[in-house]
Length: 326
View 1 (cartoon, one colour):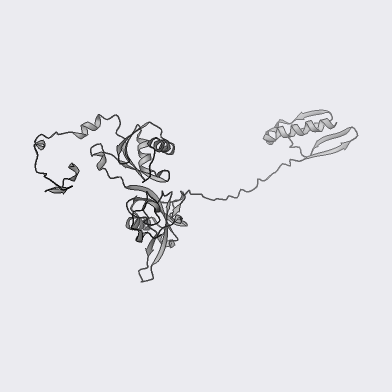
View 2 (cartoon, rainbow, N blue to C red):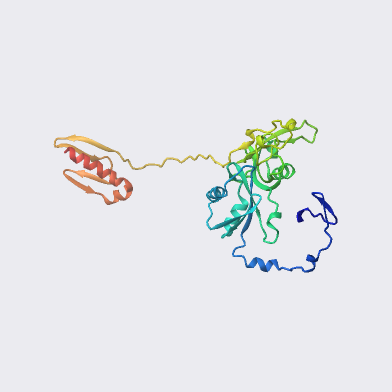
């Protein structure tokens, strides 16, 4: 009932007038030093999460999957606080940053949203409606494939920009422009970006795709439900969005080829077998061969062995096969 009280007056709730004038309870105010209170926490790395879905789910299954996806290096404790919200207490700062900066985190193709918690605000009052996600803008002119234009397009149409994608050489331009934004899950996704030239050319539509996107409704374009559970009036349920607006997570693959010139071989490394009166014998073609056969004796040339390196064992195997023929 207290949540129905409006600031500065009287509000009707369920037919009952509720007065919010100063009450006796307000005379005795508890003053808290929240900075000191935070020091008593066993860890400052606290996150508030919310499962953005209309479906029924199992909490244990949700966090089993999240642990697999997050691959944490330290421990984590989770506690439900109602309305599909959870407090997550982590042991390590690295895990804390990884969860907040990564995503979108999906369970059964719906998003698990996360937000920082300062330990001072009421957990239920912390807004949890932003989802970091990579967005592709397709077929842009090469003159717009820059960090500056990525930030401009993102801030104007897609949400607060975290990053503009680059390859491992620092280039922004590619088959599409990638922009990592904080998408508000309470508003529809974009189907395209309309762009026109300053000289008055006809506006063009540049298609948009969302990488690793959760479920979204084909009628309203909002994440967290599908067309079967859409709340739009029946007369407004028209297909405006499609599956093609979802893209797989992107990975940069750089194709390189190298030309390695052949080594100038000054030493001939070929063996010749010639018949003699006493049978087949191995004879060296060059003085630089690592070992040679004279009569029935095997002599090693140390200087030749040093030059031959790793081919010594190969030569010895050939000699053994040769002696078997004698």
